[in-house]
Image (tube, rainbow, N blue to C red; front, top):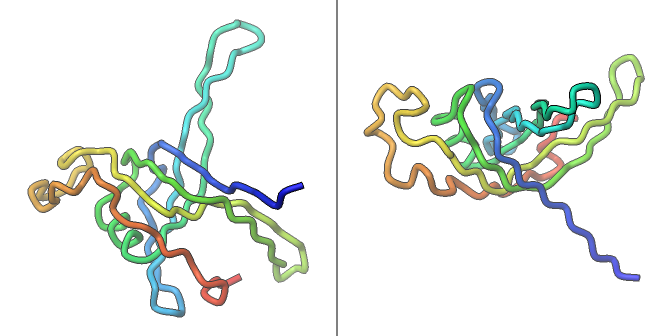
Length: 145
């Protein structure tokens, strides 16, 4: 039996809130985003397909985090390629918690200049629809949990 495994996630959706940029103890930047991606399901009663949103927490690191924070806003369309990351921690009340989130390795802005409500759309270059950065990931020592 092989030890081969794949941990890959590709999402296309819209931001549900403005990205939140912060600095890690190492000085590196991290931006947190929540992305909504719809899925269609057949309603068992009516037989019609209905849209249902799914929400995903995404972390972007390094220079890409700064670009995301600068150019993206709630409602922006985005494509993310990354990996799942599972984490576990204990609360102050000694309760164990766990969560799965997405660590972005690449982020692509899908809205064109002026579609995101920038004050000066000409300030964004032709690279705007290209991949804005490759996240370097994070060192476990940087995480605050």
